[in-house]
Amino acid sequence: MINVSSHNNQNTKRKARILAVDDDPGLLRLLTIRLRAENYEVEAVENGVQALAAASRFRPDLVISDLRMDQMDGISLLKELQSRWPGLKVIMLTAHGTIPDAVQATQMGAFGFLTKPVEKQELLSQVQKALKISGFTDTGDDWRASIITRSALMDERLGQAHMVAGTDTRLLITGESGTGKELLAQAIHNASPRRAKPFVTVNCSGMAEDLLDVELFGRAAAGTHKALRGLFLNADGGTLLLEEISELPAGLQVKLLRVLQENAVRPVGAADGIAVNVRVISSTHRDLQQLMTAGSFREDLYYRLNVVHIDLPPLSKRREDIPLLAGHFLAQIAKETGVRKIYAPEAVELLATSEWPGNVRQLQNVVRQTCAVAQTPIIPVELVQQSLGGTQTRLVSFDEARDEFTRSYLSQILQITGGNVSQAARLAKRNRTDFYKLLGRHQLVPDDFKGR
Image: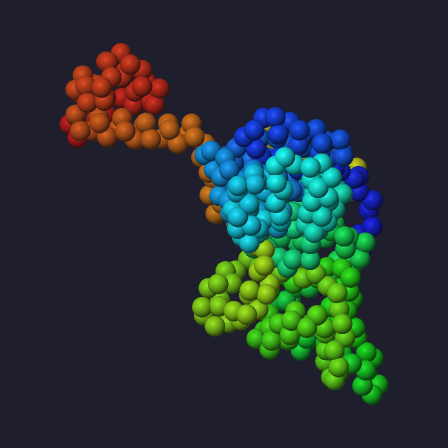
């Protein structure tokens, strides 16, 4: 399956977000005032531990941190930020006596350092340079509008995606089938400076090797055959998504590696290469490291593609999104058909607690199926059960799991004591009155256990 699209929406501009970290309240206040005066959005915290928590929530485009702090110093904070959010730029603040440490921090990946007292113009100059190099783009949240979520886990992944969207860094997006890997790749393209150029996708498992070769790299003009540009050239200036990169045949892995190394495409049958300017994003639901070990995926290609890795969580790890997604799909259907339907409360509960091996794609199919067959505006739980099928495993609620455990425990203790309530209550360390109430609540009769 191949798709070519162009995105030209004008997004609402947003301010660059800067996280300032310093245990000196006076300096922190001064930094905040100066940066806000330049129309930056600023979050100010007093130590590295607070900075990590703020970074997850605030999703900064740049961090300015003191080098010497209690609990977590600037070097430790730098390492943790680089681990969690590759591409996030960090400027270190240092006193004159710690300049060697600041130089070390720069060698470890810090963008640069400023000496205290911080001079205003130097501060603003460093900030502007860091934001420019980080690839900050002043887009609003429209870039991620197609990804419906209230999950903190998904929000963290989206924050990571936005941090690298403005760069040309290659990304590998992994996750189970149906988790939204293509949607995330499109969102990254939308947030990038390439958003006005084509976004092109190709499924590497969707066609024979010779056809995929031509589709990716093109065919040179020869005889009566018409020259084909290939998807790399079609995506020039934009983004190319290689879906299911794990299925790329060995011969084409070599060709792709050469293109990435040379930034040039040599069409099938052509002697010379053609320069291209394409950002490559890859996706797969398989473990590429296992495939490398098995010898079916090239190690050198893996490291070329996997500069930044984003792993999308399955729907089972973002259950808070299920009612939200179901409502979104129902609204889509209502717009298409002019008929609005909703789920009964029991149906929503079943959707939220069921297993979803097909993830968001499966949920969308279930919503469409149940909406199509429902004869009333309110979709009953029975239709959801039918659509899920008898093989679906329902995740029980905490209260149900607790009740199941309690009933099992009471049954075992009554069996041990032969239905003797006084002895069973002592073993359970409960008084007789409370124990009888528990038995009544779980519909257990002591006499049923006598003589066992």
